[in-house]
Image (cartoon, rainbow, N blue to C red; front, side, top):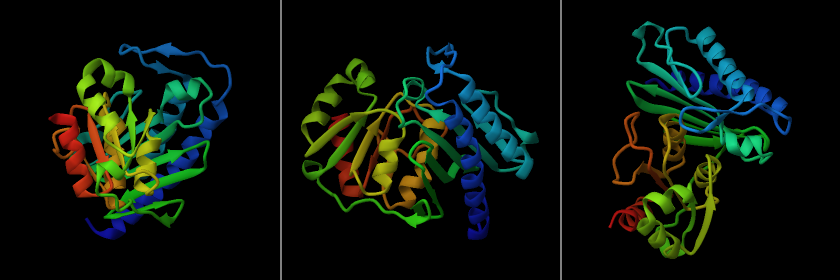
Amino acid sequence: MPNDDLDVFAAFALEASAGAAAIARSYFRSRLDIEDKADASPVTIADRETEQALRDAISARFPDHAIVGEEFAEHDAGGASPYRWVIDPIDGTRSFVTGHPLYGLLMALLKDDAPVLGLVRMPELGEAYIGAGGHAAMNGTPIATSAASRLADARVYVCQPNWMMANAPQSLDRLLGAPRLVRLSYDCYPHALLAAGHVDATVDCDLQPYDFLPLVALVEGAGGCITDWHGAPLTPASDGRIVCAATPRLHEELLGVLTR
């Protein structure tokens, strides 16, 4: 793909996400009706209006691109283009509805199902992280992962710890005791912090494609590694368990802790 195309797509993603994030912010810490979807996850008018704004922007600028989002049915645009946008309008709706500011807005662009662009925007923090073409930036400033290569020295975020306690307790026990520093968390922000070099690794699980595909080009563009728990590349068919690390050596060590 020509770099010029990626530059166009990146500029568009930043502009469209900024407009959509303003919608989410307008509803933040207001009293909203909360519905439960079939999977018991919450949804609000803020999720739907934010996603609709992103869909409208994509369709207006790239009418032949397909769109997959969390809240509405897939739009295939006739299937003529190899490009597909994947969006999560509010990653962390539980955070959003409880007034916690660390919810995010996620966008990925896939070409033939391979992620070529990823964006994490944090509306309440005024931060936008984007990766494409082997580069990554936050608010226009280049970012890179750390040089950490040993788990014993690493700072690690473990996301979705309640799911891990119920479904992978042995992996969680090993993981909690291995790094130098462990923090428990949720949602997308730890992965953005990894890309910016503030933490060295993240482990996440129970994710949907719109949760993890936007992270791929961002983490890799910053110089990091991101795969599933078995070391396989992430695709729309991945099982929702991911490992991100600053360096290949640290990534390999984390995989061993999770799967042995």
